[in-house]
Amino acid sequence: MNRQDHPLVSLAILKARQGQAPALKAALLALIEPTRAEPGNRDYMLFERSDEPGTFYMREAFDHQQALDTHLATAHFQRFAEQADQLLAEPLQLIFLDPVSSAVAPHP
Image 1 (cartoon, rainbow, N blue to C red):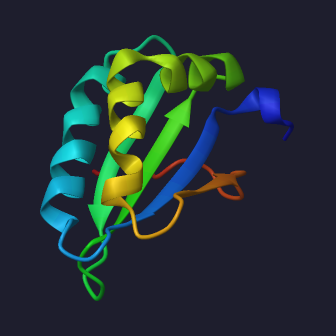
Image 2 (cartoon, rainbow, N blue to C red):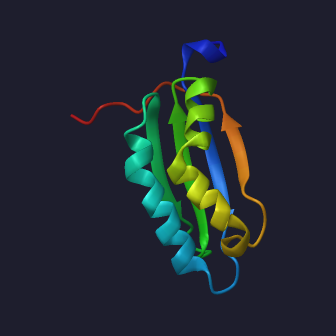
């Protein structure tokens, strides 16, 4: 399977600065609706670690690199980026993933 056969999937890891977890969570939640409405977005879902509150994971999937690049240039993402230094304890990590198994099986 080559990269063009599947969407560009990534996992962003975002760790809140001390005392900033509620503000980081709110800023991330504000990204979800406009990002899901972007052409080329397939998935944009926020998770928080159960055993490490304040550490968030954003699962993202875009049709291709151009869709991701367009997302990074949107006004809503740029607003988030402007706040990142005050909200994050460390720079966000963006990990790109390649599928190994097929998609989740449908429920009966």
